[in-house]
Length: 250
Image (cartoon, rainbow, N blue to C red):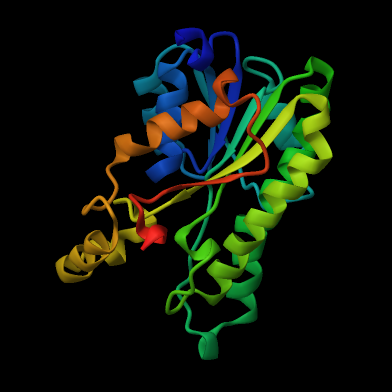
């Protein structure tokens, strides 16, 4: 059974790898044998990630929303170990602007990073996956893929879009051996949710909303990410896997 989850010989690129669930995903993939390329804008954090993974890791400092720079970004990603077999889109932003206060700048930035970047980077990496007849795309959805939260109108719009983007990617590319799925995390202690966890009462209310009775721990993402990035999920595509302790079940 180990071979189903082993990623030896596979190249994985993870965006948003400098912190949070992106960093955790990169560590999990590296521990499973993948050669990992982390992409983010903070060099020091990426260097720390590579030291923790070990010799089969590299990083690229870049902005995934820069479409003009996409060819150079893809070349940089593919240089250390070859074109990626796996792409995990963990980079994201939540401006937390109330509907009446949403700015054009905040809206455009949110859509560009959370929704447009996963598509255009995947589109640029798919030809190499097609040539191998094997690929894995993992997007990051959210509780707000199906739920409306205060101050989340732009973020929620992108995460609702991620669900349909994932299905459309599966329809387009799965005939070529490329699966496309999404992980929908519940509340995990990351930079993106710092405002939630800095309020103990709010964090407790969120934990009580789950079926399990607690908020997410970083290690809770390891199994789902390995499943969706490995041969174990060969017949799974176009799906959103909620990793939320049953928050959306209640």
